[in-house]
Amino acid sequence: MNSVLEQIYATILPSAPYVIAAYALIWAALLVYVVYITVRLRKTEAQMAVLEEALLAHSGKAVEGAQKEDVE
Image (cartoon, rainbow, N blue to C red):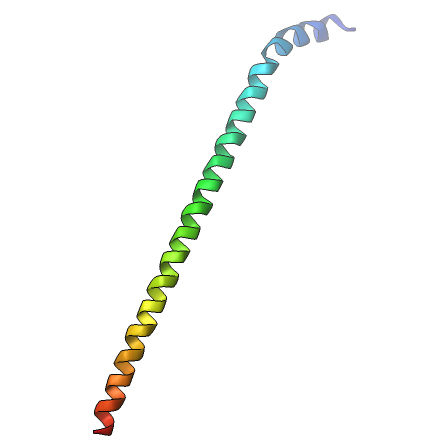
């Protein structure tokens, strides 16, 4: 093996576990963030569905009330 390559490998290889650990930590943090955002998104969608139902129920009553007033 070339002596230059031996020096490069001797410099790089001892730090390889730290580099691998850093990448693993970044990927784990990204995964946790994506799961967190997904859970929050589902909660928000559920809240919006409840609000839409309430709005439809409220506007349905308002339309029925307006129709009753028009009939009278």
